[in-house]
Length: 170
Image (tube, rainbow, N blue to C red):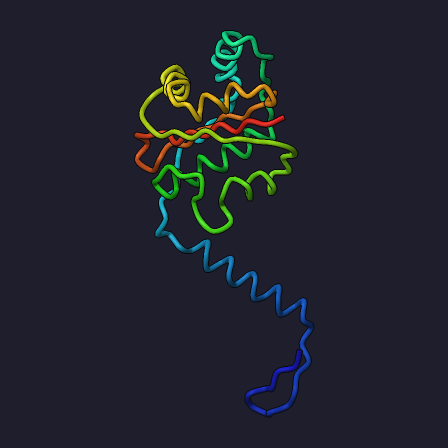
């Protein structure tokens, strides 16, 4: 890449990598300084472990194999819960490139997968009761093809509501 010196009109050769690095760094600094978005708080850590007894009870009632927590699925669930908390809405798609299929691919999840979402001021027991009362959510949790899961939540900026995500996979 070549630019002209503004004072002498002499061509100056620039290394492309140097220019792109500078542009990228400038954009990142600009984004870092943008304080208009509220940061979600209280992201879960280990929610999958807390959810294990609930899923165990549900699956045992239907004679299904138990499911085990999975870090990759939990990471995908935490990503989704944080996206929802940031956006302030419960939705499987929270922006361009933020749909379920993209999250599955970007997190390296192989094979079939499903996602249950919820938002509210409640704990695990009510969460799983609500999902069991919904045909689609119940079918996801009772799908015998799924043997692993990741569960996460993120509080909204007010700290009042949790955005929940359960990702199920093989």
